[in-house]
Image (cartoon, rainbow, N blue to C red; front, top):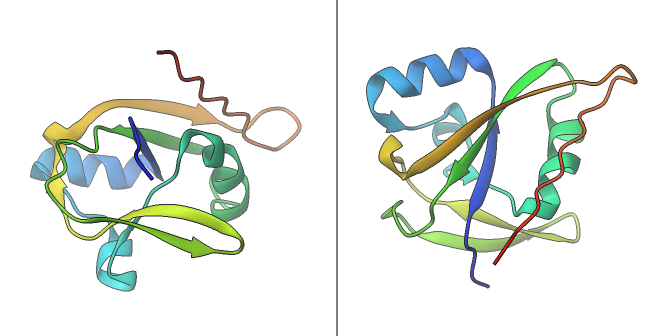
Length: 115
């Protein structure tokens, strides 16, 4: 499976750490051995189900051609997720978007892909 873009979600305090270090190495890499990423269609589900404690997140947009670490597609809960196996330079991050919970208490994130 090929991806034009990969996405991951992190908290604002996490972003401060990574942006100043120059390397994107979230805690999940040490804990799980990989960085959990998502396709555009998986982002909203992930935000609402894996970040239930957070009201604000950064949606990190990653260029998969720049990461220089293995990307493995792995099945979890009937979904295939693109996981990154290693830290990478923040130069591979092409955007970060602040997303906030809506009035109904959930994140509404729509990623549209244009060719």
